Image (cartoon, rainbow, N blue to C red; front, side):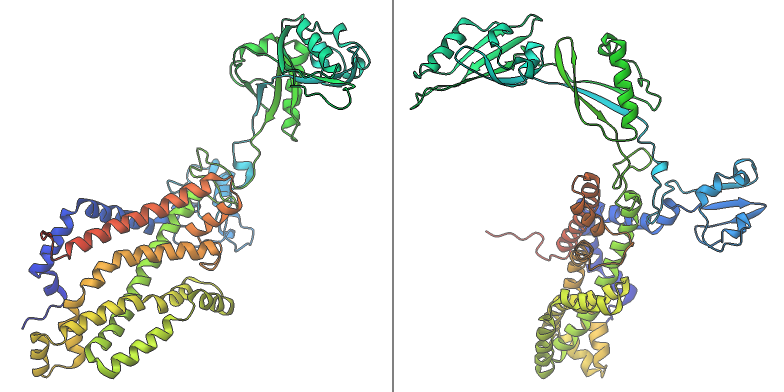
Length: 535
């Protein structure tokens, strides 16, 4: 009777057959390589993504700040034992003017805990002027003698102030069509009349649509009739735009409309652009070639969260920390947490299920009742209680989650041990006088690992998702630990920060999808009915 342990189990023909089946599942095999590569890369996060240099050559000394701590006094001789700011240190004369002193930073020189200074961001050096064409609207209440009793922006078409139009005949400033005048007279006679629209052309060539609403007779004839005016544009006008620098000059080639403006208008717009660098400005209007435009001075103000830039490809979070760095470090934490949690929970589940399944009887009944009582405890409440007493930490979260996560796998292991304990090879081992521990560990367990191995990838996916969910709810890892769930929690607070939603969600989706693909491949590899079919 051969013992299936260690290298013998790996070299077993059945194991080789299952590995071959897994490799034939191309999606699972590629997913395993991708996920393994991602985890391997995340293990070297400090070398790839860090605010500390990998190597420093200073006054003949070779220093490695990425793996060792050096006080600020070593470089500046100021007596401070705190960690130096290596980026500011590199800008000093000690490194800038001395070629013997060098610093070598990682390919991505931002760490997960480093808050970027607003002054380091290149944004805010320009103001964009956007001119959107506006359709002018107006309305006027007129009396029976066509004098104006109320004017709402009618002066925009008459070329006068609204107050100057009051009590004056509207026909004196606008040449109303005869059909409009007749329709107004009918309404003052309190006679039913349909809605009416007519077009008139102003002296500057602007086309205006004049309209009257449908009129229904009233008990008392109206004292005024309301006319509505709308600028009629035959074709859609484009939005105009240009940008100003901090000196009030136009960035790039000036557009054609800019050269058509009067010198006074250009100076006024440049002055407003300079003012926008210091404070927000309310939108205003300007007329260009007879068309009214709404002016909007836009400047990308520096505030956190900050959108992606050339140096920060995934943007910055609410504290000015680089999202790419936090996602990379979060990948390592998530996968490490998942692997440790699943390994610990699998160990506990196998031990509990093996004892129940092998001994059966009173041991099994007692164990099942205790497991049912334990599983009834609310995990989230236990997590909140333990966190409030001992404080949140990686170890505490792993412990609290692990003492509940083993229950599911114990049921499968228990069933396998129940099935295998009466097999001939187990009875032969008992007759040879082997202890129960050796029989369970060396003979039954290797043959009962199918559900354990099959469920391992899916348990890993569940652990990663649970960690993200707990971090999202605020019961997970302590701040400022890099976490995908914590980034998603920020995204809920800053819903306009799309990068806080997109990139953590995409990272979580990809890792969980790869885990599911691997799990499907493992399940197919261990399926003994690979070529069976129902007929």
